[in-house]
Length: 286
Length: 286
Image (tube, rainbow over all chains, first blue to last red; front, side, top):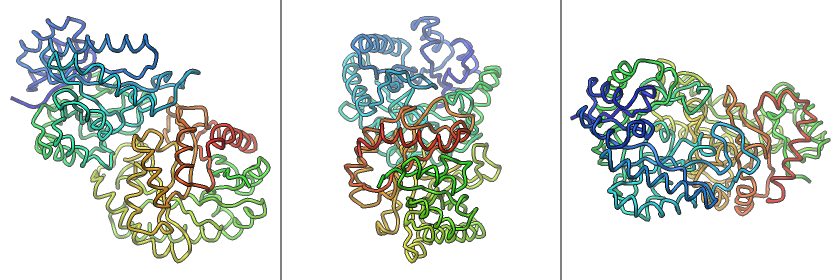
């Protein structure tokens, strides 16, 4: 069965049923759903839709947003993440991807609020505390908390985990079955320590997902949606995929692209393009 | 004398004489000229302009662009950098800042050319080779090659040095008087390893310049020109400046801002604003 997985964010305007239909028809072995499409039908029904399409769920995106300092915000974040953990277990994936959030008082893509907290060190420390809070509940449900380092372009406003090494350091106090990491080419391709960090992630048995998409320029007006089809940008997929292979990763490979132009295309066309790019640039190096 | 230095890129449309005049009047102790304003009058005259204004030259920006693989390109890059080394010596600074360039075949801010070389590892290796080529000539002239890590947003198209640790690794084969590093808050503020890398840079006696400006959002249409006045964005200047102080740095602090709106203001106004922000957010922590 194919290791290729279609992340539902790549076909943002499709329902889960539509995403599964185009993925199965194109030849994917799995889908990586986001919570919005799961919640739209409810997790039990989502599980049936994925299974009926003959697919696996390679991960659930996304928990996280753990950086707030105030008590009410912490309680709300923990509650929402417990719900995400239950959803992951229900749809049958052990891998719940966490995007941990930006500085408190940051505005996604915008200027800081007057009450912004610029203390990045303390903010990162709170992320560690919240992971510790959630691990027991996640472990009870057979779900791994999967930390996603985001490109440093997003360090202020979206995720204060910025490198794979940092994600591994945050995971270190926990068992590999409890906390893992994502290797997403878009976010980490530039890292001078990438080869050694991927090797370390493999040795520590923490690679929970390999996600691919390309770094394209110019950036979109909303940089979050600047990702491109594999092969359209600057990422060296042969080299990075080889490092992931050499680290012993044998799991699914998700293509997750945020791009307004790609979202405007018919989902079936996008699925076909994604799989073709995967077969050309990624699969030969796995 | 003030450790504050006005980088001429912050008053992009001013001549060197105008930049020095507004810097001296505002109370700066130094300027950090770019090569364009030095070459506009010639390096000997530039030296006189800076001295006559009662200022020091804290650095010269910028050499570099060392990533090409073809012989003619390598020769041209080495020739241009030898000229930059002579210019630095003539204007009386030991610190020549290097921005090392992007992937060969990349387009600054744009899509890759059909002949782009995505091999980031090999490209970074060529940078090491070119530094080795240039060190003897620079040392003869009493000029230090100062490696500037650029924010990973620029890794594809502008500079393949992306972290301070990587810059220090590239510097390691050479004496601290031969190869140094810049700590520029805009480029490194997000780095989870920043505290330890700054401490290492201090221990290894390689901090050649501390540059400040702020990470502001949203990014400008040309992300290169997204930098903001100190205090307007997300950077924690108190913490980072403290780390630089604790690393033993006692040199000049340059404010270098690329921003179309700031460039459109009168240079004297910009100089005053820059010094005021420096006194408020940086100087108390030095």
